[in-house]
Image 1 (cartoon, rainbow, N blue to C red):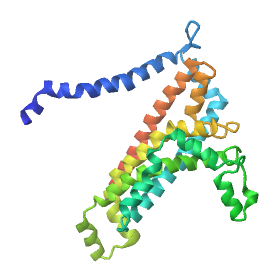
Image 2: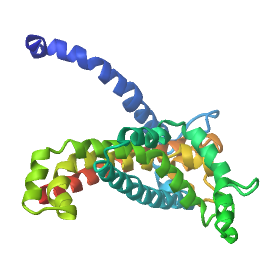
Image 3: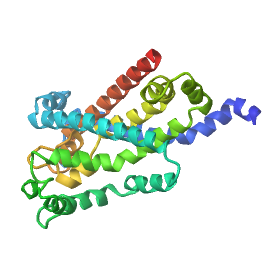
Image 4: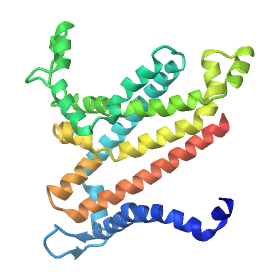
Length: 294
């Protein structure tokens, strides 16, 4: 086996499927997006080369800037909600013995459900006509004045969409962080307790340094996914009411398939890729610095 692994031809052959998959699913689509972004094209007429005009138009487009602002807010709140609450639940699970596996199984169900089914369910759940479960609960609790179409009003739609996104993704990060917590050697934890480290001190100085690599993975996954979030916001609200829940990906979709401005939509797609790479790189560098400091 060692001789095979030392053979460069064998290594190249083993890597070939992954390289081909990456090329056809990432490199080529990105290359075509960059190419189309330099043209004005509606999918039917002849393509007209316009250089970087689509990129200039993008940063002068008020609708795009609104979607970008919404996306940043959506990402920040969701990262805090998903990873933060997932970490708290993971910590609690390490202190539970009876029924732990059952709880993890039930808690993980939202993650494996279809985003379409989940979004449609919460459209009914938060609905007012007919009255959804959430509004029924408000009525039972004597807060009928708060009843409304939570996904249908600009003041509450973003909060409702963030709740749905958190509900779907948070269990995944809980499992990741829980795996990191249970991998911490018991001998180190016990030694710290013998030295008087309990509660927050134990977590801050002993568990957190061991958890940083796993926490970084969870944060990178969350940020990368939320930058490109599309399915739940689009199905639940179609980016509305108004543009209160419009995100960059949903706006790009409308530009491409409703307005048939494929060149402009491609420039937004390229922006999403660049934004994702930059944010993930900054996050990894920040987490690496924090880990060194700890």
